[in-house]
Image 1 (spheres, one colour):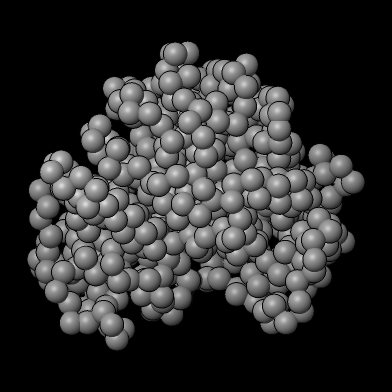
Image 2: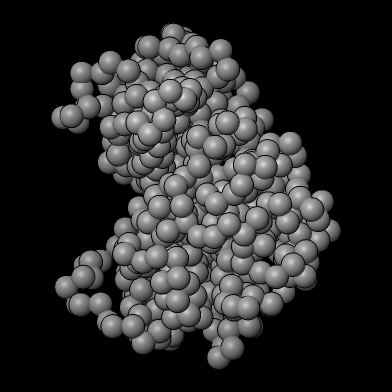
Length: 517
């Protein structure tokens, strides 16, 4: 499914009502009505418009309308099957597609991006993030899973308004772009009202990221005993309203599965996804117990190639084989899985069954959400597990350790497969859509360069991401997001966070925590 064209903005401002059910966002003025409900009064229409697709002012030194882009003189890591890279190398972009990749490309009337001192990679893909938590960073790094549910579900989740969801989702999407993630699976399991769903979709669109909007349950639908059904009628409305044409944002159904709901509920969730013709993303082996969740889905004949199985920490061996046999994808979130007590990220067990996973960051409230960091944590976890196996069982043969190129494959090629976008993104090759990231190695600690792929995986940080293109549009250049009103973004995020704290009766944040706009 793909997103349809943006609708025309009405001339009036949206106004929240007491129940929020009648709050109807429009994409350009979504935040203009929030002052009356606790948001910053200084938020302007102009500030919101600066995030809208195509509406940002062209940055100084930006390509002209329709002008080809030549990324020149970089160290190009293509991630193609032939493993052919180019050092130095050029990438020619025509419109939203890659036209050529080679050692040297001669082209007239092009906008040149000088990539000397940079590594050029495909845009990275985060296949599972609860983006709605992006305004409550670092609330729960010391939590276990029960604490997470107690606070995020029992305290914060019920008080999110649609505009809070919009602010957080847009902030998280911009955070992703800033760190070199060009495709994001937004696992939006806070669909408290139809207006919350609308706000999520608009926020993703307005960020210009490529995304899969994972329509999930309401906050109440994740509170025990989890018997509240997914709002299939509203999911259909969202699909029909936003995803009948082409666009950067597509749709999936984020279902609860056996880990978090009884059989009659997860059966209904899966049926809704199949009736709507939507791919499925589902937590399995993620609740800190051996619940045999994949085995239950297999018994119900619900497994298939259109499912991304998220986490997979506490599965039995036969369950990994069930995923492999039915062609399902896997997403692992090493940092959150280990912090929250879900188990050790199961890279070795996945590989033993022929499954090459994608990478995700999961919960902004608990851990950082940059894929570069996730790659290091995932690789270190895997190598530590293998080393421990060798220590404990020196005579037993273990599989070879993963390489840094394997990890970058997980963040690009495997991410594209998990999102159904393999024909569009994940590799740098002619005909692919132009989602491209340039990582600088000019910072002390990164040069001299010896191995481009290893440097990306083991050393680079979001601060080293110099340039990001999504669909051929330059969204970050010279280390700065383009067309972004940082003052407005700061005001909106700070005000939303303060509102959430005040309404949830949590201890207020000290005034010194707030950033000046």
